[in-house]
Structures are given as C-alpha cells and as structure tokens.
Image 1: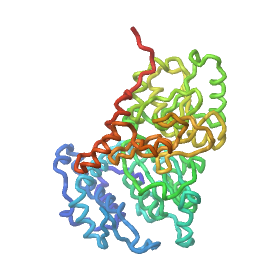
Image 2: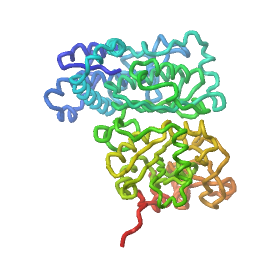
Image 3: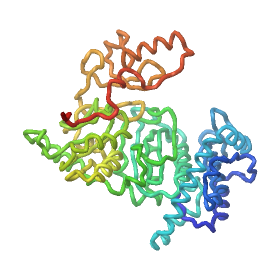
Image 4: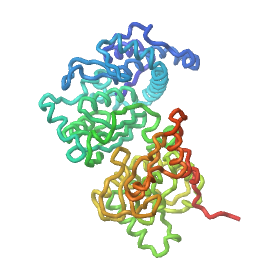
Amino acid sequence: MPSFTSPDQEEDLEACVLRFSELDLKDTRLINPSSSLKAELDVSTKKKYSFAKKKAFALFVKTKEVPAHPFECKEKWWKCCQQLFKDRIGIHRHVATQHADEICRQTASVLKQLAVTLNTSKSLKPADDRNPLKGYLTCNREVSAWLPDVSCFSPDELIRGQGSDEGEVLLYYCYCDLGDPPWVCAWQTALCQHLRLTGKVRIATEGINGTVGGSKLATRLYVEAMLSCPLFKDYMCKDDFKTSKGGACCFPELRVGVFEEIVPMGISPNKISYKKPGVHLSPGEFHKEVEKFLSQTNEEQSDTILLDCRNFYESKIGRFQGCLAPDIRKFSYFPSYIDKNLELFREKKVLMYCTGGIRCERGSAYLKAKGVCKEVFQLKGGIHKYLEEFPDGFYKGKLFVFDERYALSYNSDIVSECSYCGAPWDQYKLCSTPQCRQLILTCPACQRQGFTACCVTCQDKGSGLASSPTQSSFKEECECTARRPRIPSELPQQV
C-alpha cells in the first residue's frame, strides 16, 4: 500500500520490508545486482538501491506463495517455473539464479516509485497525514492482514460454481494515485489465490485494472475486500464492478503485474493524465444523446461523432448504430489515429464509448488535450453498463471480452459475417496455425471445407510448419494484417 517516506527513514523501511516479506534476505549473495542499472543511477538514488533491490526480491518471492496444503493458508510453500519449493532458501536461490532480469526490472520500478513517493510526500496535505486508515496501512504492511476471513466457509463453498454457468467474472478499474504498486501487486496476488480466482490484474501509479473469475462467493468477497481497502474505498462503489456469467474457467491462469499504465495507450500518465477526462454520461444520458444523433437527417453534416475507442475485432462483432469505429488493431494506435484524423473532430461534439469505460478515460483526455473538439463525452461504465439497462437499445451485436469466452450476447443481432463466404456469423475462433494469434470469423460450413486460418497466406504457412516443425515461428505478419493500414485515414484525399 502507499507509503510516504523521507530519505532519512530508509533504514526503517528496509526493516519494514523484511517484516512484511517474512523472508530472510540478509544473505545478499542470493541477490545478483545489475551493475548496468546501478551505473545509471545518480548518487541520491544509489543510496536507495539496496532497499529497492531487497524489496523487489521480497515481493517477487511473495507472489509465488501457495498454500502448503489445500484450503489451509497457515503454512506456505512456493511455486515457480512449474517447480514446488518447500523452504525459503530453495526459492531464494531459484529466483536469484533464474529470474535476475525480472528482479532488475522490478528494482528499477521500485526506485521509480520511491522517487514518485518522495515527490508526493512533499506536497501532502495535513489531512492526508491524519488519515488513520492510510497510516495503519503504512505501518501494517503484512499482505495477510488484508485478506478476507474465509474460515466461516467450507472449501466446497468457496469453489462451488466456478463453471461458466454458475460462476462469475468481474470487470473493473479504478483510477487513483498509488504510491506503492509493488505492494498492491503482492496483495492482489495473495487475495486472488486466497479466493481461488483467476484472471488478469494490472497495477500502476495511476490505479488498478482487473478482470477476475471464480465462484460467486469468491467474487463477492473480492468486491468486499476492494471496497474495504482504504486505498480504493473513497474511489469505488459496488456499481463499478461489472459482472457477467463465467468463472475461473474463463482464464488459463492468474496474472498480476506492475505496469506504467493500467490500460496500454502507449503514452506516459505523466503526459496524459486520467484526471482530465471527458464528461461522464450515465447509460440513460448516453442513450438519449445517441437517439438525438441518429434522428438527424444528414449524419455527414452532423455536429456529433459517435466514436468507438476499441479495436477492429471488437467493433466488428458489435457496435453502436452510426458509430465511427477506427480500423486499428491496438488501443496504443488510438493516439496516432486521432493525430492523423484531427480535422475530423474539429468543432465536433464527440460521444466516446468502450467495453467498460477505462479506455475512454485516457482516450478522452488525449482528445481533449488536442483542443479541437467542441465537447467530449464518454459512456460511464462502458457498453457493459449500457447493455444492462438497454439490452435492445442502440448497441447491436455481441460484446467482445478479453478472455476465453471472446464475446457476450445481450441480443439476437448478428452484425458481422464469415470471412470466407460472407454468411452472418459472429463467433470468433483462434487461427488454426498455432504460431498465429489472430482471431477469425469462419462459419461451420467453411470450417468443414478446411478454411480455419485467418487468411490463405496463413493457412499455407500452417501447412508448411506441419511439414517442417523446426521452422521458426511467426507473428501476425500475414495477408489479413498486411492489407490493413496500421493507422487508417478517415479524411478525404486532398489533390
């Protein structure tokens, strides 16, 4: 959790990390420092290097904890690289020898967080210092102290209903300043393991973004833990968690990590902050604005643009009527798309939307920073919340989700078609060539004819790989990506 610390408290901080980690890190031979990283640091930062290194090591080891026995959390073992370690020395040596690069990167991250923390502490308001909850968090850094008590539930109750029909998937995000993302990372890892949840959680100094799945009991306890945590309780409410049918089966594993951004737009939060977004509209307000937009006789002369902030494979299977859906493959291309088509937005009222609202927070801030729009609005809670209120509203088709379900259905509309025969079809599959990671829309009839790759070129590559398995792998360099401009232009060509 966030801790605001001055340089002369460094020794106390090291002791705090050792208490928190419950690990003996006195044997510094187990930690192999990166001379290149240390060489890049200034004198004041080098003094903090030893602390940062130990903290990074402790947190990495902490994320590898597993219960020694099923449904018992007292005794801990460690699992890493498909190996089980029953003593601290074993996991220490493994991490030191096999994960030096990760420790180096985490050390750099901790040093960066320390710098941010020191700068923040200078500008803290007295009210923040008097906050007893945050003060308690700073002193009591044990991860176990912030895990819900599940002793009143049987093991069966906690895991019952993890399947896609009876279980649940949570989608949420929270933009708020976090002073110690590595600690939050360790806590989130322990919390999800404690509740048998799988999924993905991204943590940064700007907040947290997560999608987790498990039993309904587990997801309820997770929400309660988040809302009771002093870091998030003033920023989140129960409504901020979007739910859908699913469970732990929707994700192959649990992945929790520290990043620069909680949604990868490719621009530092220091340059474009979440604190300057567009105006939030409730689903009802957004519905009225879209209705007004669609009622205009000539959309080309309209002063409003309904903008989809998602990627092309998301908008292909579901979108708002009359929207502008950029043909981009990643959200990190969105800023370049705005720059290339900036004149399109001049003096326009922009209505933005995305899956859950998180991409609009940064996307609207970027568009506003350009200073060309008349107004910028965004759908609060995203399509998820809109469809809860208006399942038969102006959004047609399925809602794409980033897990093994691929899409959620709220209405019977099919707005996409098979890539091969053009028949109505909206169920994604992965390209049949193992090395390709693209999604494909191919109907059952075309699948029976062998059309199972994302394009003809990729299908040929798949055949070639099958005949020569030693051939090196390839990424998304195939016909269907090569024919699509990386950053499309919506403006008419000027002579």
